[in-house]
Length: 198
Ligand SMILES: Nc1nc2c(ncn2[C@@H]2O[C@H](COP(=O)(O)OP(=O)(O)O)[C@@H](O)[C@H]2O)c(=O)[nH]1
Ligand SMILES: Nc1ncnc2c1ncn2[C@@H]1O[C@H](COP(=O)(O)OP(=O)(O)O)[C@@H](O)[C@H]1O
Image (cartoon, rainbow, N blue to C red; front, side):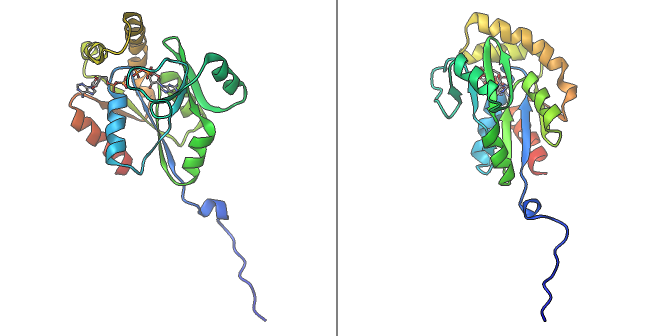
């Protein structure tokens, strides 16, 4: 009689490849979006989680690519339904990370990238301790202001709110796993690549 082997140890679920959650945070204008774009171009295997926001699209922004642009009432409904992994209000608008798509992609073995502000990054640290968080710092505060103004896409009111918030955000840099100064752009990309890919 043939005896069937008894399997112990890992379940089927545990045998599946597991991805990782990577959080990129830092003040507005520091270069997070530009760094992320470059990383995605160079590493198409990364999965970028497109957030939902109540902010209006900037010229050139596309629904579903940069953000999903939705109304405040829709956003609040999704919050009530528990659809966000994290969410926060920033400079008068809501921003949030869709829970289901992110968890699905981690489960399927992807490196999932979030580009989010401080409060959301703190929520991820609390609810997802295995996530790796990277804080992007400007070389100086005046360079940060130069970048936000140079981008030329925000109203004066919005710029002032972002700069005010930036001071608090920069003070929180040490809460995160890794700090990278985005002074020379290419150096900063290489430093993030070293963190992601060893
Ligand atoms: N908490 C949270 N913050 C987000 C999310 N998506 C974007 N943000 C952050 O919200 C802030 C404002 O984003 P945005 O209006 O696009 O302005 P920008 O970062 O100055 O270009 C930035 O710090 C983003 O990183 C999200 O899903 N959750
Ligand atoms: N290392 C850098 N040196 C100079 N300018 C930069 C650098 N990184 C990004 N920038 C510029 O700074 C501005 C803000 O960058 P952006 O990616 O929109 O920031 P964030 O997404 O953090 O708000 C953009 O005009 C971008 O081209």
